[in-house]
Image (cartoon, rainbow, N blue to C red; front, side, top):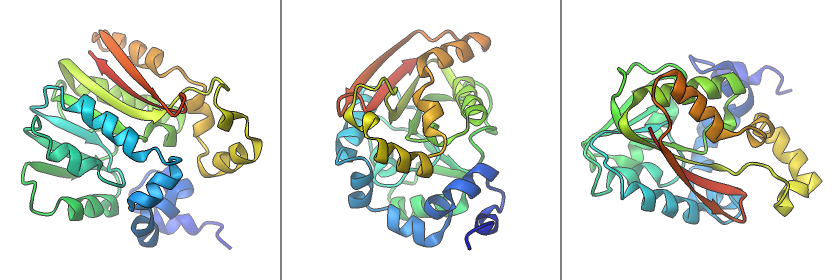
Amino acid sequence: MLFGYWRRYLKGAPEYLARHYWWTYLSPSGVWFFDHDCVINLILFGKYRVILNEVSRRYSTMTCDRTLQLTCAYGALSPTLAQSSNTREFHVIDVASIQLEATRSKLKANFPKVNMVRMNVESLAYSNDSFDCIVIFFLLHELPAQARERALSEAIRLLKPKGQLLIAEYGENLSVHWLHRFTPWCWILGKLEPFLHDFWHSNLTQQLAQIAVQQNKPLCSHSETSLFNGFYRVIEYRV
C-alpha cells in the first residue's frame, strides 16, 4: 500500500531521503512527532542529553565567528548553538523546507544572527574557507556512501585554515557493545537506517584525512569522546 508513497515527498529532496526517510523528516506528522526530547531520548537509548551536552561543551571552547550547522536536527541543538556566548554568526542549511520551518519556529525572533537557507549538503553555495566551525549531528549515517563523501568534502572545503569540525555520530561497529550483537534489534535498525551498516564499517577519520589532503588541507588533529560504551561518539577535528 505504501509502495511509491514516498514520491509525493520528493519536491526537490534527494531520492534516498524521500524513499527511506519521508516518514520521519518530510511528513508533517512525522516532523511533529519526532521533534520531542522524549522521543529523541528514546531513540538514543536515554543518551540524548549526554550527547548534546558533550557537543555543547566542546563547541563552547571553539572560535565561532561563523558557524555552520549541516542540516537541521530535532531537539535543542540549534537553539543551544545559536545562544552560545561564543557564537557570532550562525548558519543552518537543509534540503527540506519543512525542516527549516520547524527549526525556525524553535528559534523564533530570539536569535536574529541565525541565517537559514535551503541547500543540499552535497553541494553548498558557499565559497571556500567560509566558516570557522561546522557542526554535524547524526547526519552521516543517514547518507549513502557517495553522498556522505560529498558532504564531508564540502565540509572540509568550507572550513577556514585552523577551522574545526564537530561531529556527533554512532561509533564504529567493532562488535564490542551488546547492541551490536543483539540480532533482532540490528535487523530492525537495518530496516529503519539502511545506510548505517556501511557507516558503521567505515573509518571516518581516515576518510576525512584523505579528503583533506586532496584539498591541500591536512587534518591537523582530532579528539574523540566515547559515549554509551562506544556506541556513540563526539569527534572534534581541526584542519
